[in-house]
Length: 186
Image (cartoon, rainbow, N blue to C red; front, top):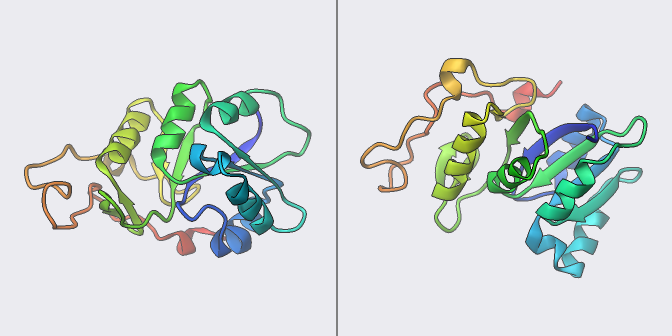
């Protein structure tokens, strides 16, 4: 398997925070964007590749192509930053056999059926299920790299009657507070 240094959910994909903080902090040499829709649109592929900082190669793959590309041996000193818009994408990668150990939940805004989940992350019911499946499979879900939630805080609470998906209240689904990304990156 190739050297994945960070698998991050961020519906903005490449943007200022990724370019100015995550890439230098993690010393990423390559970005792989995993998104079936973006990969199918050559205009969007050109746009996201143009946003990568100079010296950082960027590739855009479908989930199936990414699974294939990630399972081959990497090149020496390669450090991959994986970006996807939803946790569902990473769950599909894991189910395809890619042995990711941690998925970092980054910016995911409220839209469609998404409701506040934790910090700046909003998820829809299918995305919550994807996170739960990844946790059951012993993958770490975090909002900061190298700062996994404590064992007692990492378990998603089961949906309650009147949960965030059944009401307009925005109660987080984790019990313990989680650090904001800016506090974690050093």
